[in-house]
Length: 293
Image (cartoon, rainbow, N blue to C red):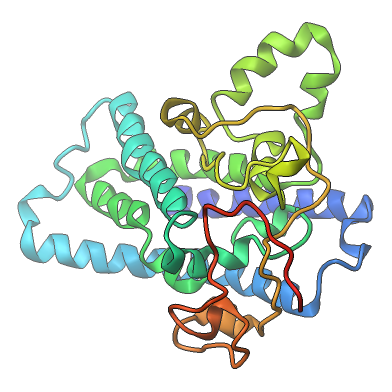
């Protein structure tokens, strides 16, 4: 229980520290974030670790205990490196494909859309997704199964490191600039940017249009490991940062519509969240198109 608490407190402390640094740098005073954006970010930040993830784990534990009780702690003595590798594949790689699907499937995009409509980066962007996006995320359910099988202690350390990497990848502190600034560090940068997500590679994913030569809206899907993008051919590395972020359909729905779609739907027929299928649905074959509000 104590270690489980640390796995939440350490990422929370990192988030707070990065948020303070971003605020001191003037990020949250640019005027690009609305009250709706802040509400989405705070509600998402509060619900994922306290309701959605624990709820999925409870359901998973109950189901495994009911149907497969003999498998509880079955792999508890498995070498920790094998356990880490299992989480990297069944959680992080699966999340890569889940994320990639949300950019190629028009229905899935509606659940992932809150993550991209904000027009600036920052650590608060990290958890912006519809409730259903996380509730259905296969990696969380598979992690619950692995924990039941006895990999709980390894998961605590694994998820702590993963969350820190993801938070840093969204942060406007742009820690990787240090690696690009000095030529002697370029070999180290080459290894790091092909292993884990960095601000440069993940900012490119959030960029508005690939026309700037930096952004890669339909690629750079990796969460903890950027290696999956290298392996599956969706990587773009420029060591630069886009200047414009967002998504082409910029209708500003209330926070509860963005987070609770399809339970709540937009009344504006121009919005993607008006129905499961609309004329304004995101088209993954179109990198960017101007949208008249």
